[in-house]
Image (cartoon, one colour):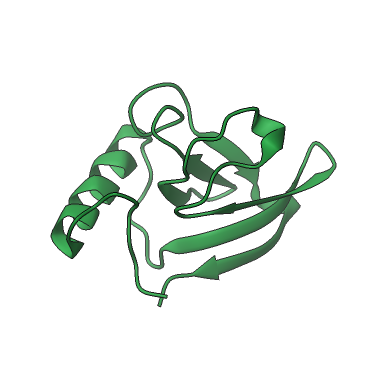
Amino acid sequence: MDFFVPSAESREQAESVFSSIANHVSAPTQEKRIHKVEWLHEGEPCQCEIGKPLPTVFRNDETVLAIFDCGDLLKICTPNRGAIKFDPIHASKGKVVSIAYFD
C-alpha cells in the first residue's frame, strides 16, 4: 500500500502533515513508515491502522493519522492524541506482535 495520511489531498500535503506530527511528538526520521501495528495493550490484543479508528479500549473513535517508530516504543497519533495536543498512544516494542509497513 502506498503511503498516505488521512484527509491529505496530495502526496506533498501528506508529507507535510507527517513531518509536522513527527516534530510535535519528537519522533526520529523514519526509515520505513508504519501502516499497521498489532500489540498487547494491558494484556489485550490491539491493532491500529492508518486511516482507521482507534481500538475501543481507548474509548475514543478518532482516526489514526501516523505511527512512529521511536526506539523502544511506537507512538500512535490521532488528531487529539499526538497530532494537535496531548500525548500520543504508546505501544511498547516488547509487546508488539506485528508491524506492517507502507510500500
